[in-house]
Length: 192
Image (cartoon, rainbow, N blue to C red; front, side):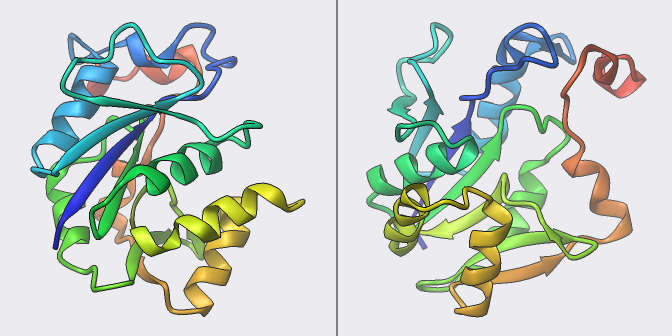
């Protein structure tokens, strides 16, 4: 099944104090690490979604501006789904560096025509390391126009409509979803 990928990099990084994308993770900028993770999945196209085109974006990666007004990750996913022409879009947040291409590749094996997959930890969706079918673009854009901008609410509706399949995250896989939000999150041996 054809696949595009998007790296969500539109956050303000206010708790971190600096642009998360430029932080060093395992001696490389976080953006480079995340784009390599996505690139290893061999998508047809890779997007970076943000408020403005980041200076660090490689020439072979397409910029897609977050749908305005900004509604957090919902804006980036809506924009990327609207631009992709592939059957599915794999989504990865800039601040989830412990996610692996092997895990994302396993998710890819679980998609089907018109149906994506979203990991679930303790009954909570993990929408920023998930795969969505392109047909959901209108659902994400419509959610931008409402009063509830929660990805959790939208995903519950999509799961109930069988547009997105739940994938339970095992105890051994939970660390893939750890994200970097504040400077202290970098002080672990696995971040150096």
